[in-house]
Length: 406
Ligand SMILES: Cc1ncc(COP(=O)(O)O)c(C=O)c1O
Image (tube, rainbow, N blue to C red; front, side):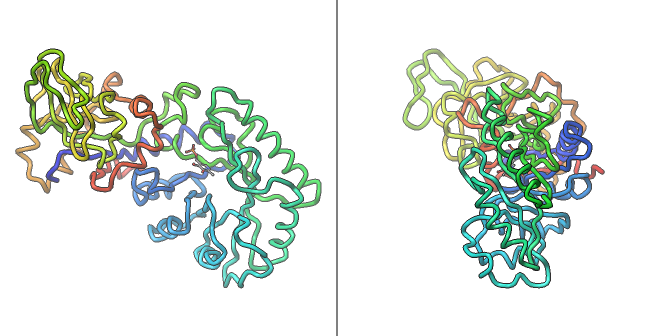
């Protein structure tokens, strides 16, 4: 490790969040965790290792590519593709026992080629108000189900819907979706269908209403440590899994009238001490935080000044007199441990820095007050934690702490 910019992924926090969410659902309700987009940017392989040891029954992904990657990681439990899958991808999914969600793009089911030695597991989605995927009527569902059930190489494995506003300020929209969904399930049962696993709730749905859990829930963001919306569904029990750090590469005095950064969007009105930090939008720190972001340095908050550059950003450390070149800066998450000093970083050889950072992070107590909440950082950037964790660039090394949890 040469550049002092990295993220810490705390696998014990992930395991803790799984337990918190398992406690929130009915004992008989099963848990699926979404690991799409490289496990929401956390790195799919280490996340799957934790999931394998947990009581989570399945994982959700966005595409066949992601599903195959999950299999390559050695994950043996069911994998469900939540998005659309083309007809020609179906035999491959069947071969790897990957569950798929039905879409109209398959065309005539009777005309699809044989699936091979393993049956294709199909989940049928109902569109109850998201207008993204699924049947809008029972009539449509009946035609497709008739064809699926007629094929010996296909198994009807699940019925789903997706909530558009489970974390919204009002629960009216979600209640209406659940009402429609429950009605559709009841109609299917009344028609004599042996309805398989029923699932509807994302993290917001689980946290919002115990009546929306059905047979299985599909959680994502809560497992990674965030409520889908802190202001509506506060979840202090959850622990952020990812923390992001960078370091100060230069400190300079800036005089009144001088400008900072591209476009000269910030003009000093008083003498300032300005620090340059080794992270930018190419690392996933949003450019929208230009002149509006805040970071933690030496236990204090420091504002971002000027535009975020591709690889660097500037912060005002006028009120942080102890800030020095080499100090670690928290971009989001727990404050950097005190033992992360510039002297230690320089003393330790680059090939041993990972180990040192991990050990000191694990042993640090991280005072509660010294946390830069990703929800706050994301809302300053007019986005959500989902987007921020997904867009951390692969060039930012991920360091996995507490990897040996059981
Ligand atoms: C169909 C489906 N179910 C569940 C989830 C998980 O949602 P969340 O991360 O809000 O829990 C997603 C994520 O976007 C999804 O697309």
